Length: 278
Image 1: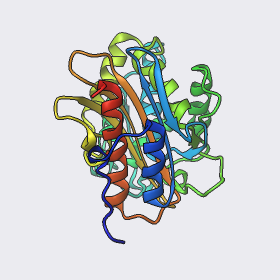
Image 2 (image 1 turned 30 degrees about the vertical axis):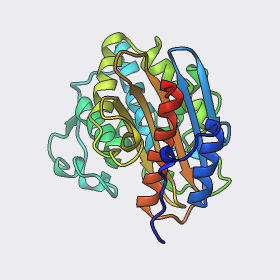
Image 3 (image 1 turned 135 degrees about the horizontal axis):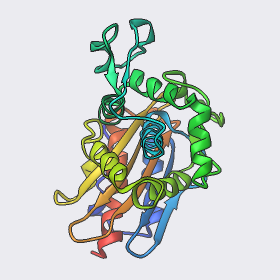
Image 4 (image 1 turned 180 degrees about the vertical axis):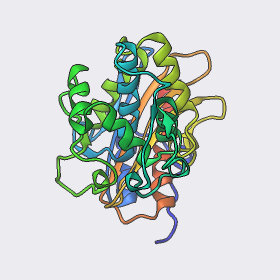
């Protein structure tokens, strides 16, 4: 598939939702976006109430739940979790080095899952709080009636069209991000720790972050799956300004990974002038 240009900054700017629709059309897939400017409560989106497979963006929620349990005295970040090679699943760059040893701490598992999207780390985190049902219950406790996790890695990446399993909506995810990262769902120390992990993410440089000005800080969690699924959720922090929360979910496309990444960058680039008024 030939490379597709997504440089909408060079084009006349229509309404933000229309730009999102144009980006979607170029991918040939289904794009869901929701953005919240926490400085003034403004929102915009495209297909923001439709379901999309979370893929590895669930690991952000899983890390938040681990930290919530730490806050309640039900978990410790220094607790070691031992596991065997039989527990390893595809794409586990950190956990594969420690299988059959004394394992890794919960903090190390969270860091591996969030910053490198280590799949076995994600499963071990899930096992620590009751699996997918535990994560879904946590989302309900936040007032999120949409996000659900039904399977573990790597089955949750199937992303079959119309399947409600392991899905969220862009708007629901942003709402939960607001409560987790900027609200009182976590203690201040746990919020700081989660933000540190998001800021340290090494998998999202070509997605949302690629469309932002160099002086904007971005903390994000990506997700990639079958059926063309390519996702990114992020907290954006322009200098001297309140944060912006952005969720981008793309699926049902045959576009190359480079073009899927470019679509994410284009969404972010479209959001920037909406925020700055430029």
